[in-house]
Amino acid sequence: MSGLYQIPGLLITALCHVIVICYLSEHKYSQKKFTLYGGMYTAGFVSIGGYGYAERGTVLLFAYIVIVICTFLFSCIVSRSCFAKKCFLFITYFCLFSALDNVLKIMIRLFCPGISAPVGFYVAVVLRSVVLLAVLALYKKFAEAILLFLADKRDRRWWNLALVALLFYLLQASMSVLNVKNVMSDLQFMAVLSVINCMMYAVYWLVFSNISYMKKDTEAALVCQNVEYLSARLSAQQKAEEEHRRLRHDIRYYLETIAEYAKTGDTSAILAYIREYGNEVSEAAVRQYSVNRTINNILSVYAGKAKERGIAFLVKCNVKAELAVRDIDLIALLGNLFENALHGCQRSQKEKLYIEIYIHMQNSRLTIVCDNICSDDLELSGSLPEGKSIGISSMLAVCRKYDGGLEYKTEHGICSVCAVLNL
Image (cartoon, rainbow, N blue to C red; front, side, top):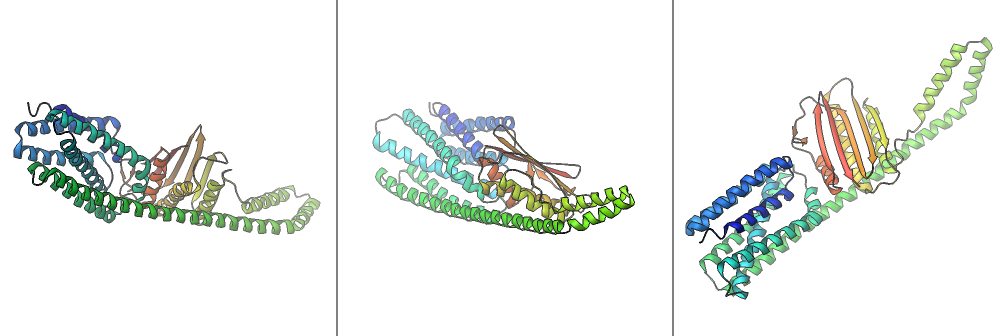
């Protein structure tokens, strides 16, 4: 019977792995394609696991190793994160999986010594799956934003974290082997396992706390960046006010000049002079792009930067004065978006340069579209640039925070970015 009664339990475990990997990874494929790969993985998992339980002994150990490798390959295939980050997330998950498996098995033996093998097997499988999915929900709510703060490009950080996770996974795997070999009593095993788990949770708490502090420092830097935007906006307004004072001071000279043209009946000269004066007044005016103060400040600053570089800056903005999004999130999203657009125009080295921005609020969805001239060799990996920068990672984190998305497209030398926030 061994190898047969475990099959439904293997199916539950495989489905748990698929769900966790689905929500841990940054999806590379559509939901339909992910489901196909998940189905293939589940079938392989159940087949290999069932064969291992049927043969027992060394075959079961070999089957476990093959299953771990297949699960790792599945998580790598469906995720578009950098390889080091994939390793960290996968090892951390399997480390937690092994820790729960060890704890549940020893607790069942200690507190339910008379329970049958099939019942004990399914109690462990169900409890383990429930706890893993609960931990996944906590991760999505509290920890995902912290990990998204680390840009994928910083592989060294991810490798350091992956090595820490690997150390604890090897300890958990060693405890699993000792448990099977019955090297120590159940109480001794439970004591050693408790020490290892406490150390593991303490280290992970320290890691996430440090990343959280780094994230707060970055948010403080974004607040400073907002102050810079406000200062730049204030400086532009002051210059415009000085120019307006000059124009008001010189108004009588303009009127005298128009009067002289009127005496001679030169209406064409009068119209041309009025047109020239109107252009001078409009150039001196500070343009308001949006009724939302933060968006207007950012647009004004980058309009000035674009003008200095000879880049046309076109804006269509239709949003409310108050939005249900934090200012530092708008700064992180729009600041990085426009900065990348400026760099993209300059790197293209083309003659006609422009950035066109469309910001629209419909119902509770904020849509931001930015089109800019870019290099013809700009390559995308999925819906994001290949080897995405820290700025793009920051934009992606903001979009995900508001249950939205970020998508890049390139066509005929134009890079189009669409960011969506659900407010």
